[in-house]
Length: 105
Image 1 (cartoon, one colour):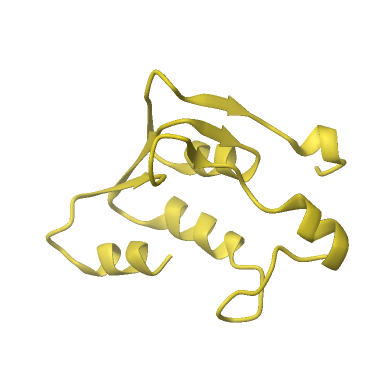
Image 2: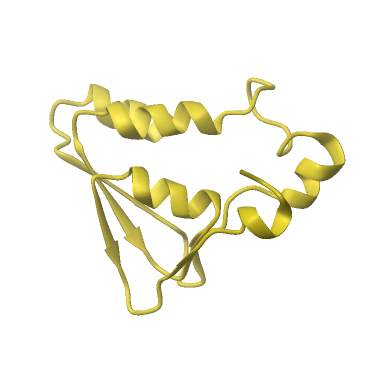
């Protein structure tokens, strides 16, 4: 989220590319086992669930946000690429939702 805010503040930045590290996955979302056990997705710097803030920054940033999807984009990762202005998928990209199988809306 910090990188998006820095990009937003830098007038020289014209676009932002969001991607995963490596080729295995773009993002597979939160840890549903952790969520079931504790009611959260683990510790964050503020002590709160930060993903909604990231969603808002991606939606509101004036620069073009490109999702470079490599590998899996599942659950929350699928949502992230949908929020971006332009998703670009590699030949290894796979999209899906895990919510119905774990009872999440």
